[in-house]
Image 1 (cartoon, rainbow, N blue to C red):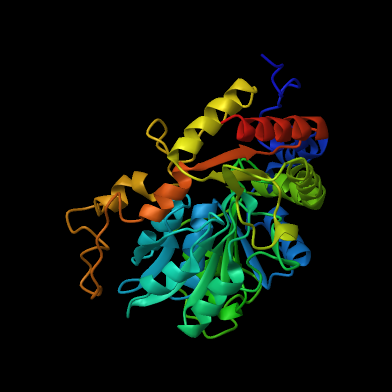
Image 2: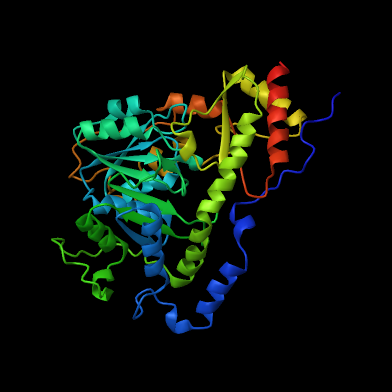
Length: 413
């Protein structure tokens, strides 16, 4: 028996495991030593406000608001565009459950669309799922890989739909040179522990139009317009009170440091992924995940899609023999909350009360039904998909050994 391809230990951990240093410690300590600076709406510029300016300068986004999570950032996106009871919003069947939950949060109804071999929303199924009540589409860029944005935007424009980008897993990703989200109506980042940059937990709501941005700000904090000293309501928006997603200054201080590291992080992860792909032979039993814009890929994830169930099983076993243990994205052993079939509350149309809002909201004139097998193409692709996360602790040697393991496994059956 030959020596397994994997000889060098593969480092585990999220990206922040390898990027946090004394700069984050100093940023947090500085605030802790001055408790008077810990409130978001203190007098003068604070950490969150400076972070918002810095993130707009980096990305080219029009307006940004730091909030408590990526989930709350998505709710702000929806409220910003006046989406609510009576509206349908199309979301991909492969995304974190929060994407659909944000739609429910504003009183609208999520409509599920299939994915394709980008692991993002299938443009053709998007068009099939449009109803007379559809007002927006949320495009998710899973694991740093841009979806087929060109076609998706074209369809949205054709049907006069708002397009929101869920960039929570795609901080640093670009589409044809522009940060993902910037050219759409609104987009969201997550600063959760598992993301490209992180402050532990947090999010950012981005918007192009100023009045829409103000509506998102109202969504984020019922007293935001009362605290604000910057003439926030100079446009036509009437203030309203809804949720409470206010960011905290400690998280913002850490996020500011992380933001300065973003480009270096994705430069490194992109280089590692390119090294892995460069080491692969011509595939026999699989295809690479299709990437609509390879240069914009953040490089934090590598995936192959096997040809059928038999090759998926054989490939998984052969890779394990080479020392590379991976499992398919959709399998019975792990209820991945990124896959719609495990969104129990949505599948059963459960509301918080017996009124079953928003499914029974009288404003909703459509009809929606969910089932765990309603997106068979999505389940099939994910069942055949084997994915490897890429972090900054990995080396070119790790990539070379992974490529060798995949090449050997592919030729072993």
